[in-house]
Amino acid sequence: MKTSQILSLALGISLASAAKPSSGCGKTPTLTAGNHTLTVNAKERWYLLNLPETYDHTHPYRLIFTLHAMGGSSSMVAAGQGGYLPWYGMPALVTDSVGAIYVAPNGLDRGWANKGGEDVTLISDILTAVKADLCVDENLVFSVGFSYGASMSYALACSMAHSFRAVAMQSGGNMSGCVGGTDPIAIYGEHGVDGDLNITTARHIRDQFVANNGCTPQEARSPAVGSGTHTKTVYQGCKEGYPVTWIEYDGGHTPQPRDKGANKTFAADETWQFFSQFK
Image (cartoon, rainbow, N blue to C red; front, side):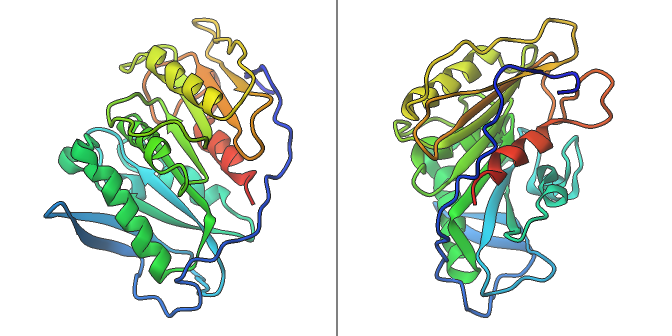
């Protein structure tokens, strides 16, 4: 447990389902690693794509969207600049046989205001294009983001719960809206008890999906102020395939929260632990 106060232990089970290969499986791809553009609402938008070095067009991969914060960019996420780990630290952790394809879309005005749902449309259009050209397991599509990127991941959970297997919201809020928001979807959330975004909104979002997912409500305790630790709650009784995990940490608004004395963030490891239970 190290310095973490673990309130509920993960069950350690694999939420397995049969692979659902996308229409891009078996095709010689035209999409390559790097920058790609598309038009949404008469605006040119772009995203960065990262493929496995040994990409196999017959093998269905996970697809992980990595969404930047306010003032950030897809380039910063890909390069690990401005406080981010590259692609939120996922490539160093995804070492199983499934592997992953990564997408880092670029928000308008360096954010995700999602006016009129245009950013949800962007993500939907990218998802459609990638699945049609590359070999993706449609049952293993994920999104992770920090701050505004977490807010955008929340918007995806509300609007595209049938397209995403799970989302991870790192210190987010409700700045990108929530159209729908009544369907179950697997949710990972973390938030500092101090920070630019008040934790109350994040707790409300957590409780929204605790209810949607049929989980048993329970008190999620907070770490003691000044302790430099984090607490973790794994909700029980959720509908099969729709877990909810929640972390609160003693700290502020940062993409790399760390426990006191730790030399690395727990955010990447915890996010991957949540995503990796889906096979």
